[in-house]
Length: 383
Ligand SMILES: [Zn+2]
Ligand SMILES: [Zn+2]
Image 1 (cartoon, rainbow, N blue to C red):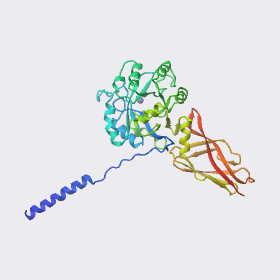
Image 2 (cartoon, rainbow, N blue to C red):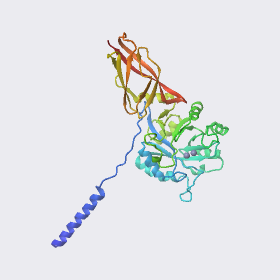
Image 3 (spheres, rainbow, N blue to C red):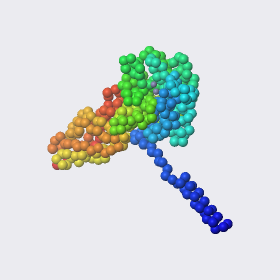
Image 4 (cartoon, helix red, strand yellow):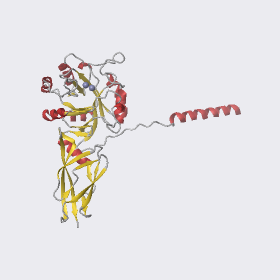
């Protein structure tokens, strides 16, 4: 090998090495998942789920894989893509196979460790309105003339079926229970109702779920890219159904849904049964100084850490006997809040156990009814 050929060969090696360096060792774009901070409670892991989303395969504006990507970024554990069966405005451009959106999204869900649940939206005029069927095996048999046949086709596949956005397209804009809903319920084909859809809270749905023993659901029903849902600083998070599951699997989610073990998380509220809201509050709250010293002129300071991201809005139900506490109190999400307490009389001495009764106004156990809680600490009175 001549000197010049050797030189050219070395140059080639340097060029290839440099190319490989830039190909494999160049800057990699990092992707970020923002986790939803709601602590687990005894016996359950709390899964964050959105069971109502659309893609271009019905009237949505995004490709199915994007729904999975968005959900990963939003810290969700599971989503269902529920394209309309009866409404496919993009059918000139995409397949009319009702299973296609799920099939396209599934590999991305696998890659990201997301749970993707096969679903569809049975889309009929009110009554009965729109119903989501999730945990179906094949969406195409739901494409049938009579609404009862469509629901039955889902039920026959073991689906979990729930009524969406009850007031949608009602001429008076109200949520009304029609005889058709009684028919579906009596057949045992309705398991839940959306208590929140997008930015709308339906107190009637909450009441119906309590009375008729149905599962409370909250979903985004997102059609746009999810980034277009949030209003920065005002409403940043999509609504979600918190599922109290035994483990992070599709089977455990399905079991929990049928067992009505859900809490709605939306619009800065948690909505659900007291038996589930209470442990979530208890798991979130940590009184940092359970023994409060009231030495300085009968005044003391209490500090409470809130380990959830939900700010709890408390209203005192009854002032305790020996001390005065704030009538209204916000325990800010993921922060330590401190507040003053004051002895009612300078004559009080010794150590007293204090149980303060508050109502958490944004944790709703029934429409307009907050969760009753007690804050426990001891007050040390010294002169
Ligand atoms: Zn709908
Ligand atoms: Zn929808």
